[in-house]
Length: 382
Ligand code: NAD
Ligand code: ZN
Ligand code: ZN
Image (cartoon, rainbow, N blue to C red; front, side, top):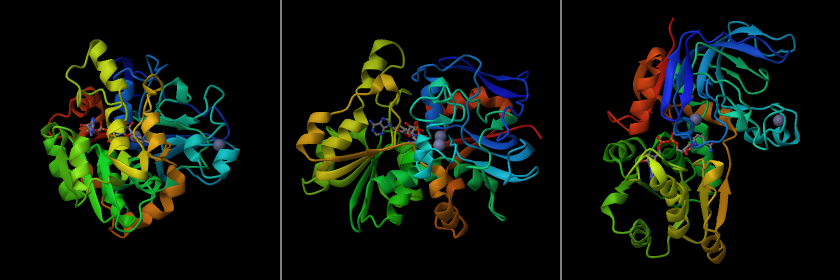
């Protein structure tokens, strides 16, 4: 089958000879992929920032498909069902899944470490192949995969597998109260969705910070917020303090993580990149521009080599820091309702639609932030 194939940092290709996955366990399903997306989290893999990303792996944790085959233990899904498949691989029965912490499943795979499993996300997350392919094996098929509601656009459905719940959870973790000023760092798909969702929690003011003008323009219209370019500021923290009577924002959301695509960085190779990416700029800005006693919600992903936390400021200001992988299944019922009722318009962030064969171009465009790219969608053959 046709599938994305990781060859090493900044090197991927469309592979025509990857074997079609088989049922390996009674609770597996095989899904024929109908749409998939590339995520900022894939860029961490693409940039070589996640340990144990193995050559030959297929990425892709945001996809929809049609059930082709089910294992003998699968009861809820049947062949022919059109499904959206959350990025978390969750067993549904461990103590974490029982608390609806589906992003923290303990049982997904014997190789998985404390964070459970994700599709297409390196061996530290289970080593499962992902959905940037024609077919994918879906473990625990009765737990997270969800039949796409009648009348829902497939492009909305595919965004419910990650970006919508992730943006929503970023706002939720911020504990936003009515009238709060919320600052979102990062105007990528996740930050855009977090800004839009902040209003659903009663925010009084939403400010987004990035340095890519086209994304700032986009988010202003899409999320009805203010948006500012940090490259035009002497100091983003002072700028934000001025905006908030010098107290600081009530809530700051880090929707950047370990960004290596050149954003706040001058170069994308060598030591300079690692030092700057590891300095966690957005997280530092968030901690320094939130008010005392405020909440910093970190939805951006920091690979293990980038575990630098400004603990002194967090302690001195009494900040609450909340972070997690999104728990997609927990949020789906609410978010399906928001989409069906028109309160959220996920597909509005898709800017590029490419055949799966052109995956290498798609990664390049999304990583380099070229052609005003916000979110690229991949369409498999047939
Ligand atoms: P993206 O790369 O498209 O967007 C990141 C944006 O951050 C870019 O627009 C970039 O210009 C901007 N940026 C870089 N440095 C900045 C800084 N210092 N201040 C403000 N903006 C800055 O990625 P995305 O798809 O939007 O994902 C964003 C983050 O969310 C990634 O780290 C991704 O791994 C993470 N993520 C987390 C979860 C989760 O469940 N926790 C799920 C999906 C994605
Ligand atoms: Zn994702
Ligand atoms: Zn579990």
